[in-house]
Length: 245
Image (tube, rainbow, N blue to C red; front, side, top):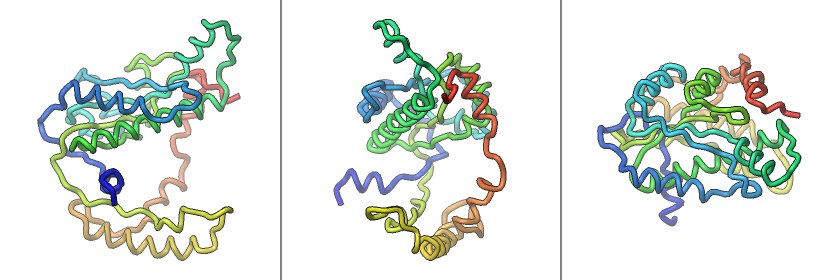
């Protein structure tokens, strides 16, 4: 196993950080590494808000569900899908642009995720820890107002960055044969493989350091599919100019 694959396989979410600050030049290097990610048609449909103001970080922590490490980590980033910059550039070049297409939303969201994952890998290669914050989408309108996000820009997720002050275990993943399909989508073995994975996850949850609980992967999924998760997102995205035409 080469060092890059080993690094990727060692990913953990870090929620406790030391007081050590990330040097500014290192932070910029991480962002530059993020910019090297693949991007659809070179659109680069993302912007990153580096939230420095302590009061704003406290507000975001509350809006994201009371996640205190947003305020305590060295640096907090909000990754935004951004179609404003590119459509306006095309317009200035003489294009009669069409805004609000669903594909534009997909492209911007994918570009943002790829860019952020590059930042994450670069950060871990430097001994930093990180935690993605999907709770940003709990109150996207309020966070967009706080960050002064214009139309055709929306906050996809946040990222805490800092020097780790914990060493959690690596969380198991589904067996590769469950998610890798040859030629066609086949699920004949999925039920048995998921049942086996549930046992793996039950052992992990019981044995891990901190927050031990008696549950399984399938049990953990239940809240995601027994309620309408963030139903406000459709209206919010449409108000931000993503009409999904």
